[in-house]
Amino acid sequence: MNIQEGIQQVTSNRNLEQDQMFAITTQILEGRTTDAQIGAFIIALSMKGETVDEVLGAVNAMRQLSTKVIVDIPNLIDTCGTGGTGIGIFNVSTTSTFVASYCGAKVAKHGNRTATRKSGSADLLEQAGVSLSLQPDEIARCIEEIGIGFMFAPAHHSAMKHVVGPRKEIGQKSIFNVLGPLTNPAAARRQLMGVYDKKWMLPIAEVLKELGSEHLFIVHSHDGLDEISIASPTSVVEMKQGKISEFEICPEDFGFKTSSLDALEVSSPEQSLEIAKLALRGEQEEASAMVAMTAGAALYISDIADSLDSGVELAKDCIKEGGGIKKLNQLVEFSTKL
Image (cartoon, rainbow, N blue to C red; front, side, top):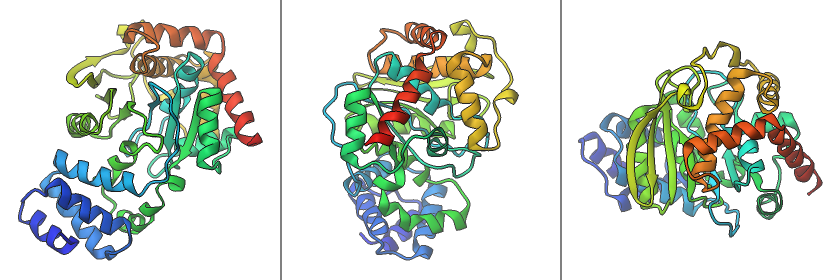
């Protein structure tokens, strides 16, 4: 099926089969379609509503064309979210990886520069001094030798350059907002993934289940974050051993107090790094709480902790002893010497 046929089918409110979506996405990512065709297809698909099979087809096409990081590590985890929330707080999930890694999790962090916020994961790490220009084998060494590595999305998904223009011109969130977090170059089978809209939670869990994921949390907070929030309850979809469940968590579940996000808002990578370091040292209460909850979830998902509660307690202890800041400094030093 070509993209013109796909546009006709989707605008007729008919779903695409997985192989049809695979074929169309491959055409797009190989540069065999026009910007107008891409824009029309994205909008039509969004208006119809994306199905699990359509997302699966697109993800498989993107994974096939990605530059891989080859590691053989059990329980490897990623904490990449969709972004797109329009709420500009510090980079919680990225900061949390240093706590999780210090506690024993093996982290293959996948991320990019900001598109809608003031600081993306790559912006934060670059500001901290982490090298973004590592080759796949060097990233693998980071993960294997120090327990954490960062994969800069444009270096692994060069085919996405064909959709940058149409996405910017449309100015609307689409299926391409969720494809990145679903295509970890190191094939991590455990994932803590935040989404910008609750509608994506169950479909993404179903997609990742079909793709062989072992344990994951998909999260979206009531205040609109693609994070576990300190300011409101957070909805969670968990997939573990093939079973999907839904529940809610709130700060009080872990001994924290529901608090405003105001003190966590940033306007630059410099500010984001400043708050991240305060959080890792336990010197900013709300930031440290969000990092502890997020890192705790990652520790549970990666089987370092046997429950979410015990994972958060492990993370709290790590923050008290400054383990996260030590791990950040270790990644900076290791990545710049390779």
